[in-house]
Length: 112
Image 1 (cartoon, rainbow, N blue to C red):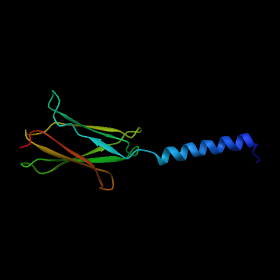
Image 2: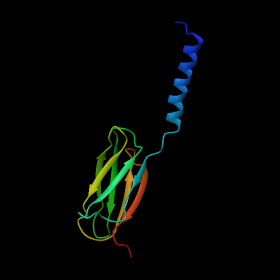
Image 3: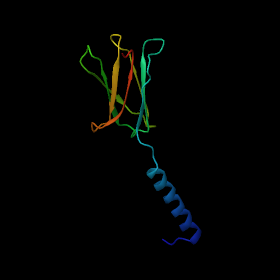
Image 4: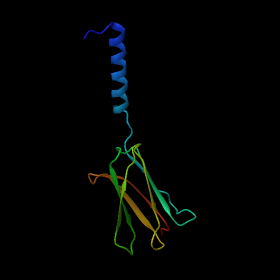
């Protein structure tokens, strides 16, 4: 197959655009609100995750054993986990990727 100069240039520009986009892709991130919403739920949000992967969200409270929730990641690389705290108080939130690497953390509730 022979490429004309214009076609070859267009191919290289397209390839560079794809590679540059992949190289500049954002790292996975997590958002943890500091308070619950009016319904008493906390919405943990993730963005820039690998599509169709999963995240493990761990809730820690001094009076409870840690609560782990596994949440699937959508095709667009995002997830939302709604969590209703079983008892009032302060919760630490830690989010892990599928390999067990800590990606983010936060806390909500009443801290001393």
